[in-house]
Image 1 (cartoon, rainbow, N blue to C red):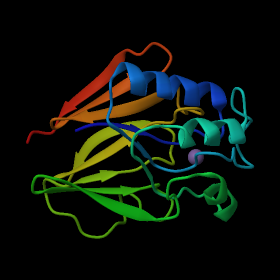
Image 2 (image 1 turned 90 degrees about the vertical axis):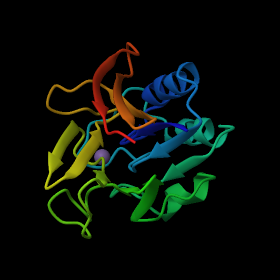
Image 3 (image 1 turned 45 degrees about the vertical axis):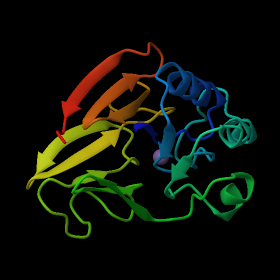
Image 4 (image 1 turned 30 degrees about the horizontal axis):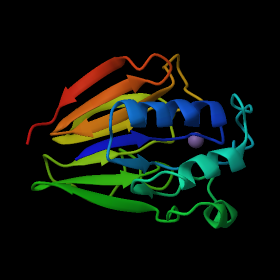
Length: 183
Ligand SMILES: [Mn+2]
């Protein structure tokens, strides 16, 4: 399974298009979104080519499984225009005997989440900064933001395949970081 993981598209048609270019070029088999997909949010400046309905149309047209959790900027009306479920506050992915706890990051945080075992991972968005570090044996992961990166980070997303996480710069397609989680 090759999975593309992205967060915080915030209605940018430009960066959504780059994300789907990576999805195609990398031949990813599914797309996991970590929330804040359509609405820019009142505290953010408008991202490049802000066009929430164009983003919805691009995502709805994908011919592969799209999964998402709900971000703090995602509301019922966003769900009404998206063809895949976005309203869950968290979800779990199983990878062998490991669990990946998936959430946006405003309700559960790396500091506060249901107990995970060493070897599990906590995957979130929300802070718009890529992250890869281990805390108490739990791998803390963040793909960064596709549209509104913060702290001088690139517009980014993350690939997961065969126990390896790779961070991609959406504008160049280059891999900017890699973490081998093992099998
Ligand atoms: Mn956000």
